[in-house]
Amino acid sequence: MNQDNFNPENLVNQLIKQFNQAFVPGAQALGDEVQMQIRSAMTSALQKMNLVSREEFDTQQAVLSRSREKLDNLEQQIAELEETILQLTAK
Image (cartoon, rainbow, N blue to C red; front, side, top):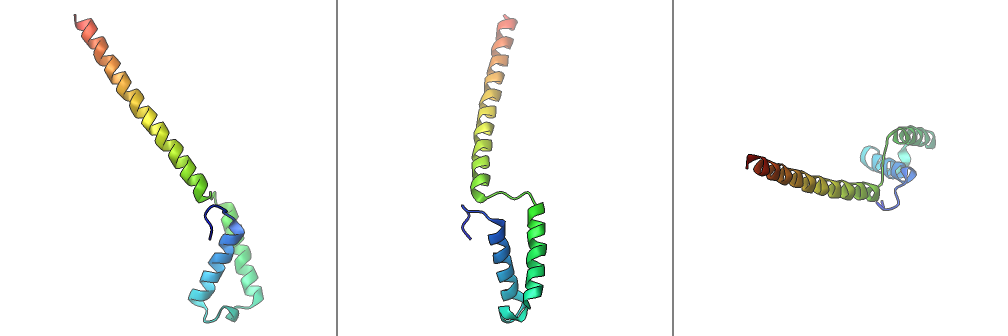
């Protein structure tokens, strides 16, 4: 499955295919009715989940990493300013 084009329907198709391969000798063993019920249940469950594409996840992870770096720099600056204030007030 292409991670850049996240699509719940593609995920459902992939899961059904894997289900058929793992649990059913020969994918045709499940009747069309059962496959449609499984597809419907899986689609419903996936739509209730708050899923994002890998690209969206990676983007947000990069934003979080930059924010963490900025926060660390600000914490360091505050520590330096506090030290400077302590030195000035000690004189």
